[in-house]
Length: 160
Image 1 (cartoon, rainbow, N blue to C red):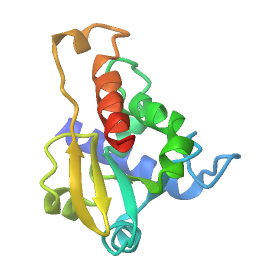
Image 2 (cartoon, rainbow, N blue to C red):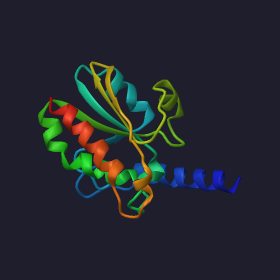
Image 3 (cartoon, rainbow, N blue to C red):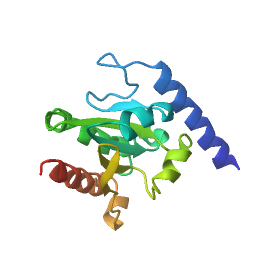
């Protein structure tokens, strides 16, 4: 019960922060330049009804605030953001959405099994999906292999 309450508190703080804290570089509470974080209400317009190509990062908002490097989803998102200009130059929108305690309907609709998951959409249809491949090395401090692997697979696909 205490973990549930802690999880709910983290989710509420993250929800409030993403709605109220502004990054000096843009409108995101997280220090990224190219990923646009949206809420569940915007998801249909930004992704499902889009006439173009969209890369969506489905994450747990609480994970974005985690600073422990070996497990942090945020380090993965920073890696993707590093390639943001290149991704956008290929005609993709880059979207992030919290599917932790929020937007569970979207989490279920896309049968997500891990966070983060990256799904590439074209004209509202899923065309490719990427999930992290965890291994025993990932449990060692400062080993970022799952983040590096997931980033490489996503970028390699988008460069085709």
